[in-house]
Length: 133
Image (tube, rainbow, N blue to C red; front, side):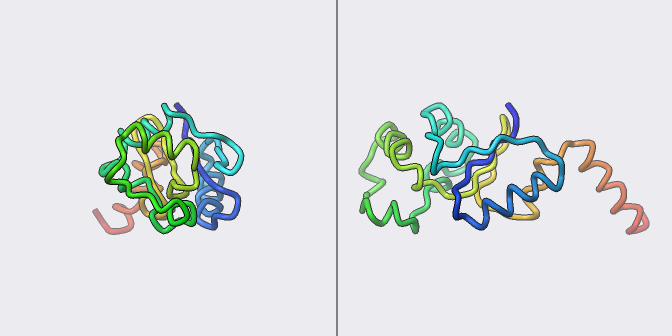
């Protein structure tokens, strides 16, 4: 599984994540949630990789969340997944995911984990040389 960027058209953080991935030559597939439906398997994959499940991936400040007036603690996992599939704007954005990692939101330091291991190792060696190690 390659890197997937879940984004929306008007999201500044999504644009920053896209630019970072492009600038670092990381191949990715962009899934614009304004156009592309997210599947049940994709939502489940996000939940498996996240530390706190729905608490990590839901945007409780989003217009969609506020408009729906949902009480997430009263819904089952299946109901929540169905709701996200119907209302993908409930998701925080951007979401960057591969087979082992997920990053929710754009954080310049954390996104580096999507760099290939050899690139990260080379950057560490260069930093150590500069620091005199």
